[in-house]
Length: 599
Image 1 (cartoon, rainbow, N blue to C red):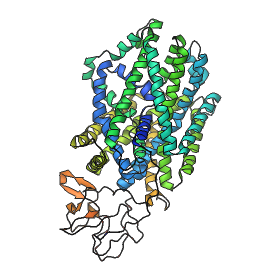
Image 2 (cartoon, one colour; image 1 turned 90 degrees about the vertical axis):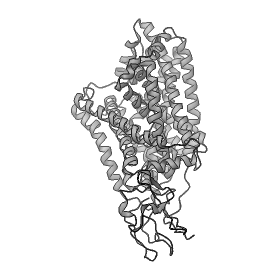
Image 3 (cartoon, rainbow, N blue to C red; image 1 turned 30 degrees about the vertical axis):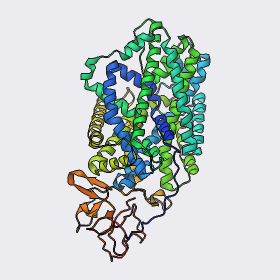
Image 4 (cartoon, rainbow, N blue to C red; image 1 turned 30 degrees about the horizontal axis):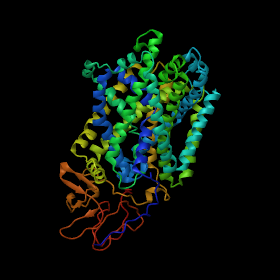
C-alpha cells in the first residue's frame, strides 16, 4: 500500500492521568462543588420534595450523562484543550472552545474568593466568631459590604489574604502537573470530603428536629410533576452540577490514555455526583430541621440556599447544636475541599488552552495564566464592593454563558457538522457500555430543546424584571456586557493565527470531521462522497461515509493526513489518492496549499 506522508511535526508527549481511577476522582472532584452542597437541597425542597427525584433522574439520564459523554468524545478523540480540540474537529468550531475557556476564566476569578470565605469560616467555627447574629456578621463585619453598588478598591484585609492563599495553593497544584498535581490532590481530597460529610450527616441525624427537616425534603408532592418549571429545575440542576458546557470535561478527557473506557467512566461520574448531592441534601435538611425546631418555626421559614445557607443559616445551627464546633469545622472544610477541586478543574481549562496555543511548557503556562487571574480576582472581589460584583457576574456567566455555550456546541455538533455518529463510534471503540441511536437522540434532540427552553425563559424573565434591583449600568456592564463580551472575544481569538510552536502544528490523533453540506466544495467533484470511508464521519440520513482513506474498487487506498500544513509536503505520492481537503489534485499534481488548515 502506498501511503501519503502526513505533514507537520510528530506530537510531543502529552501529560496524562496514570489510570482511569485517577480520572474518575478528578472528574468527580470537578463536578462536586459548592452547588452540590448549597444548591441541590433547596432546589429539591422547592420543586416537589421526594417527587423531585423522578425528574432529577430523568434529567440525569437524558441530558446530564449524554452530554458528559459527548464532551468525553470530543476531548479524548482529539486529545487537546477545548479550543484546539474543536479546531481539530473542524476549524469552524474553534471559537466554541475559546468561548468555553473565557467562561472558565471568569468563573475562576470569583470562585476563588468564595473559597477564601470558606477557609476563614473553618477557623471561625472554633470560636463561633459570628456571635449571636451571623447575618450581620457576614455582611457588615466580615465582608464590610458597601451600600453603594459600584466597583471600588477598598480592600477587606482578611478576605484578601485568604483568597491569596487559595490562589497560591492552586498555583502549586497546577505546577505539579496533571498526575502529580491534579490527580493526586483529587485522590486525597475527594475521599476526605465524602468522609467528612458522612460524619456531618450522622451528627445531624441525631439532632432534635432532624426528622422534621427530612420530612420537609423527602415528602413527595406528586402534583409538582405536572409543573413544567419543576422539570426545568431538574435539568438545570443536573446541567450545572456536572461541570459540562465550559471545557472542563473536554480538557480532562484529553489527558486519558487511548484505551480508556469512556462511557462507563461517565456513568460512574454522573451517578457519583448525584449520590453526593443526595447525601448533602440529607445533611443540610436534617440540620435545618434542628434549626427550625430550636426557633419554634416551620422548616420552610429557615430553608434557604446559596451563600445565605452556607454563611448565615449554618453558623446559626453551629452556635446552637451539640458538637457545633465539630459540625462547623467539617462543614466549612467540606466547602473548602469541594470548592478547591472544582477551582483546579476550572483553571486547568485556561492553562491547557494557553499551553496549546503558544506551545509553552506547562510551568510557564501555569504561571502565565494563574498570576494574572489571581491579580484580577484579588483586585475586584476582595473589596467592600466585591459581593455585588460576584453576584451579577456569577448569574450572567452561568445563565447566559454556560447554558448558551453548551446549547450552541450541541446544535453545531448535531445539526451543523453531523459529528454525533463519529463521536459515538469513537466512544464505542474504547468502551464496554455501547451507545446507539438513543444516545444521539437524547444528546442531539432532548438536550438542546431543554437548554434552549432554559435560556429563553431566563432571558425573557431577566429582561422583564431586571436583576436584583441593581443599577442598570452595573448589570449592563458586568452582566449582559460580560456575557456578550465573551462571545466576541472567542470569535476574535479564533481568528488569531496559531504560532509555529503551537500544538496545532502537531499531527492530530484523529482526522477532522467532514460534513456533507459544509464541506461539499472541498470534496472531489468527480467521485461520490461515499468513496471516503472508515467512519471519519458517517451521515446515516445520506448513507454517506467520509474519511481520509480512499477505497477505489479492489485497489488499496491511501492513508490521509490528520492535519494539513501548506508547507509543500502535503501532496500525495504517485499512484495514491489525495486526501479530501486538497484542492482538486491529481496523482501527478504538484504540491498545493489547501484552502484552510484543518487541524
